[in-house]
Length: 170
Image (cartoon, rainbow, N blue to C red; front, side):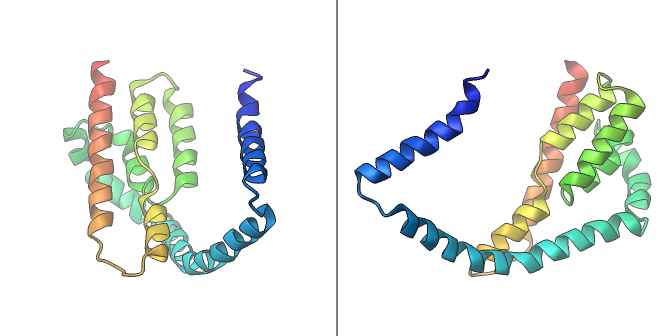
């Protein structure tokens, strides 16, 4: 296990030696890359700020709790335990909020319970869709409609349904 921690440093060292062998000006290449990153960061910031604010407003307004209570019967019908509805709704918005909910589910139901296994699947089967969308739209020259976001949300929801089904039969 100790040797696995050397993979990344060895990779960097190998690339460094290879660049020296090819006579690449490493410092100049590094600074050129940084120059390209700064405009991307500046264009990304407004999208990330909006997503973080909407995520916090969704939770603080009580909309998350009301939506969870409203959707719980439909989730139960689809095989998703109602106890993880809030996690399924929050995951596309907030990774850190989802981690906190996952910890709450573990402490309430135990880490080996069916509900906890489904929560793990819901947590691991998706990325924060809106964060990825913010990165995509910040770098895209042409801002397209919400169709990619809707497709990603639908795919994440299907992954949760399938994952909970697999947790039930395994």
